[in-house]
Image (tube, rainbow, N blue to C red):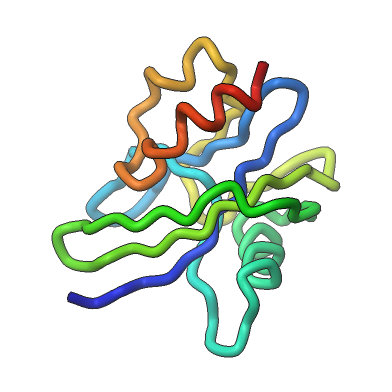
Length: 129
């Protein structure tokens, strides 16, 4: 099975986490943490900064690694390095996603998350308090 290695930004601000809704593919309409594929020769942190710049036209500060998620989707195995991040930009401008939201703890578990992202919710909910 093909393995895809990606990074995800867990962007937290004022007790909320930033999430994006996919606008394409098999999981169109599902929510996820922004990020993307690591390019050859690129570090995970550099990939995350680049992906957020490309997807959200924004700057972030990349902090600690929260978790590396391993998940088997039907057509590939996903390795997703999830980093705690802080926004350095006041606003985000979507270039690939159909929607975005600052998710509060009270609705965190009610959003339709991609399966690999959903694994992180309990750990993130503790950080939002």
